[in-house]
Length: 235
Image: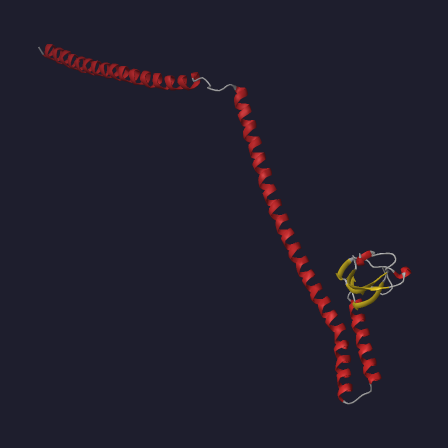
């Protein structure tokens, strides 16, 4: 009797354990299957998407041939070099323009300074002329002799001509010279011997030149022979 109850109790425990193990196994198997199916689907979908993207990138064809891309690269490089050369050229041109302006200004200042210096030198050379004229006037007012007055005037004229020569101005020789319409201005004529025909016989105002430039022609009288007819300026 006791033996039977003990045997029955053990059998019931074993059945219970078997049922619990069976339930757990079924549950684990079901869970594992569900997880396995779900994971397989997600992995396949993600893998297919990544493969599609990678394939699209790898299979995308180039729209331009390689030689076209090389030509475009060379063109861009050439354009950059041209831009660099143009920029350098603009810089050099601006620098040359600046240096040219500075040189022009410096030359203008030097020319102005030279003109002022030459003018001052010319005025300084004329001051003795004014002094001599002043002395001649004083001598005449004090009753000086005519000879002393003439000497003063002659000295004044000599100083004036010296000042002109110092400035590069030369008087023209007229009396006794053949009439030259480039240097002389005929005011009137006078009858002379045939051998003096066309010669300057008198000078009314002296002519002057500076280098090859005529400043003022000499106003002169020209000899004219009745037997030979008019010649030179008299003609």
